[in-house]
Length: 365
Ligand code: NAD
Ligand code: GLY
Image 1: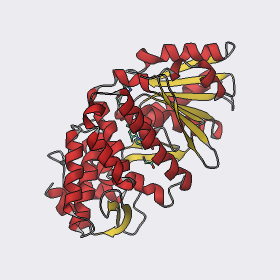
Image 2: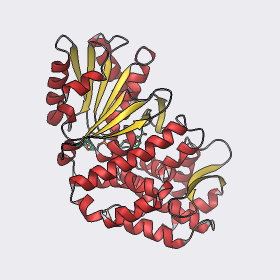
Image 3: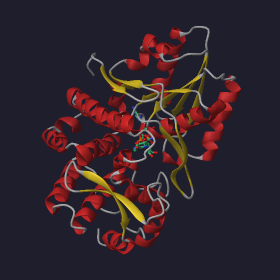
Image 4: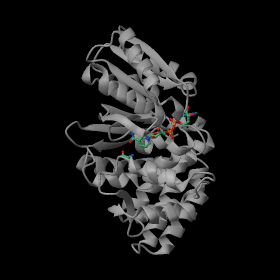
């Protein structure tokens, strides 16, 4: 990818920056700037670590030759976002002798970022975490905004903390090894920004779909920077999700229910489940008379162009999915709460949605 680095600033009580570009994992000066102490734990998974962890650790060692650097590697995939793996990560921090100024470097996709970020949030009540996202999804969404979590049997991401990263370095060179399915999953979250707040971005995505699918560097860099700018602006205004930030969950109430019901790591991955969920949210909006059907069809067509699923996987029980949605973090005791839209680029929070209408939609999609 190109040598130029794009930067997006995230304002707030703990401001930080997102750097986007090639070669960042080997940039020891830049890595060192965000690392205060003398201990570093590199957290990664068994697909990413063999490709990138040696180079990262070499860059860290160049930045601080006297430092202690350790590595914790988890099995790739959502099934690793568990209490057991979290405990393993905490044990790795203990074995390292990590002090309060230690830094966790989260090298991987959203699974690594969420788990490593949560470990950093908990160790000694909070140490630094630098997010080094290697999936498109993590670059445009999970590495930014400070949400960290693990899954428990009762639901996805139910155990977690808000813990903003010290910095995000998105090395776009890593996308060269990303499986095509994971690229598409990331595109689902890119589409989400257009759907919720930026209808012209949907036009741009339609016009640049082929370039994005072909991993054209300039198109990807623009999609990442534009997505990060949206996420940065929203989380700066509402870091703890008291309001507007919930819009980022468009499609997620449905998607999380699907992920939990099918079993974490089985069937659809997160981005795919969100794609299905966004189409369901758009269709529910149409059924409730909020939005024109044309917008839902256009969203569906764009997601399908990106090779994403837009229908419920077979065999899932609508009532069981509705029961999952009651436990969703967006539910606040006033019935089902969804992010719906008044049309492309105009999402809003809708409370008290009738469960029967949702179950009927699920049964017919
Ligand atoms: P993931 O972390 O499971 O990564 C997907 C797969 O790609 C894994 O097998 C991984 O090993 C592999 N991989 C990663 N980078 C690679 C590379 N450069 N080359 C080759 N293989 C690579 O999944 P994801 O889609 O990145 O993240 C999904 C997770 O993110 C979910 O758990 C979701 O809940 C979470 N998430 C969190 C937030 C947040 O705000 N914290 C937002 C969105 C999603
Ligand atoms: N991905 C949803 C959020 O960060 O709020």
